[in-house]
Amino acid sequence: SGLAGVNELQELEPSHCEAIERATQFAQDVLAPGLGEFARAPIRAGFHAVPSLNVLHLHLISQDFDSPRLQNRKHWTSFASPDYFIAPRRAVEVLRG
Image (cartoon, rainbow, N blue to C red; front, side):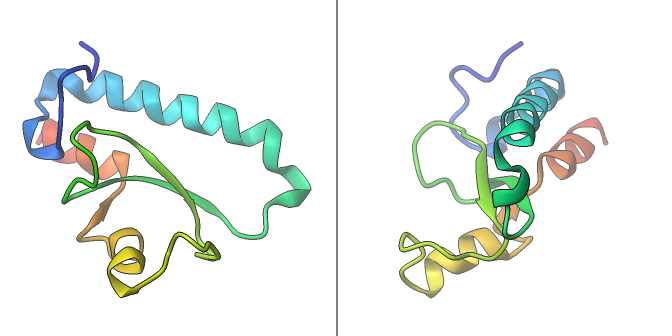
């Protein structure tokens, strides 16, 4: 099943693992050819443990955290802390037990 209708990590079920893996692979496929020499820092994918929007979505963020969007400590923490920024692999591991 896909991720349509899922609003946050807590709503995920084991049946969503394949959709998470597909979304992660898609993100890697999109990033791989486009960054090349322009990548200043590694890019990480993840979900917010406390959602920022009312639909589950996968974030991609440069690990140099150089962005005008990271305006305060709360923004930085939401992407830098493993308790708040959950790697897709970790979500799948939890779902599969």
